[in-house]
Image 1 (spheres, rainbow, N blue to C red):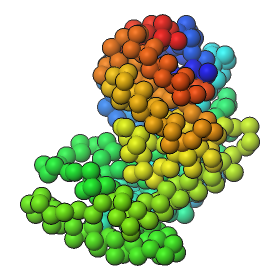
Image 2: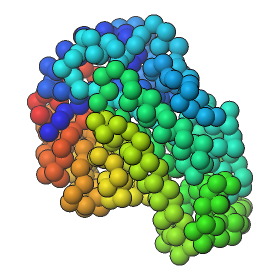
Image 3: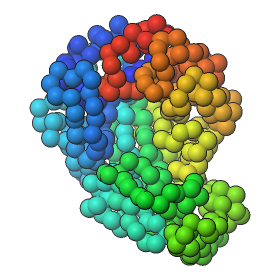
Length: 379
């Protein structure tokens, strides 16, 4: 079983690549998943040598992109790339660590704000600038080019795509806020895209997307009035279930296109969901079994709280993805998910019981260094 750690380039820069690599290998790890395309954030860093709070640049990449690969959507290198090439530093100081390029795909508020016509739209026509729409041909071209560009960087053995498809209404955009309690159906309807490209795909599939958008508009308006109006079931009502199937096909076909475009020697992993538990991944257009067939493996977050809930989530993912799916699981070896090495060991055992071929831990910069001791003991 491969054993990896998710790492940010700014942590390598601030703490020293060789020092971080020594800590990781000392804990029994043999791989790093390095953020090479990432979004904004406000991150607490318990063991940073200077400062404790970090704000990464929004929607940037951590290598020098080749503009000729792209169309309207052009990636922007983060400012830190001028002084620090994290991939080259890993190749120089940590040749024993295999490198996965952790690529945040369509969650990009910088590009969404610059190109609102390529972002998802609510039933009301609101543009969700944090979510590029995978139905849009230019967006599909962008993500394929980004993966090819990333795969061409030194030392990259694999590309792992997070947010390859649609996003939910709540996805950590800056200062998200509401004073209306949103039940799951309302949240799902608000996060369902009805942009022109999605409506075209629906029409070509024999679905009346305009009618579904109008239904969602009316139902949400009534719900916002006093909270008592019933909402359509976006997973089980026939028209809505067909739309969810179409959304899943949209995401699966995009991943298939990327896999076909990448060099065969470059692996492709998909992080299919940021939902907890993973049974909610359909909201993002993720069909675990279908994605497992078109990518090389799934890298699945197991972010429930406590070993029992984490093990149950892992087992359900295996059952849903199917016995032939190549699965890796991502654990958080820290509060609030586990309380120590013993609980972490139980979670590791659950991944092995599910037949995982990889286990990864999230995230070096966010956790106390004592979590490395927990990892070493758990492994």
